[in-house]
Length: 176
Image (tube, rainbow, N blue to C red; front, side, top):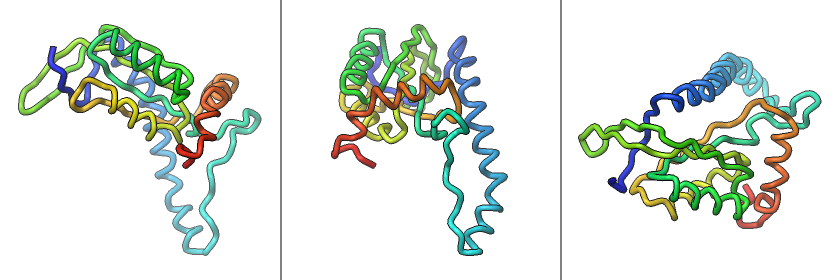
């Protein structure tokens, strides 16, 4: 198996998972585009643009948690990276999704590999630090690290993600 890598295209169960995850993100982008004229008018009038607000009773700020995706060549590598990001509190939880098939173009050739997909839940503000860490330990030449903001979800779970990653968030080296 080669240790070079480009962004993956998932087949099988992974495609269904990603389609479910991408749809809310696309809807969120579309809804924000519809608000763009209102934001431009408020800027022209001199009033500040609207800020993200907390969901009514949950206390969750939409987009403050992200789901990050990383592909790994095998389960051993995925488990090592998953355990390290949780121990370092760069993530609250990592799910490993085995046996995905990735088809991608790399250096002019179409490649196909079996991989393990990591689904990492973290604070959005920690995604840059998470990305740097993954790149430093990942065996691929180009590691896939992509993140999508979570707009909605189970409030107790989203609060838990914040609590678990609190000590890293408050670290002076990782403050936004």
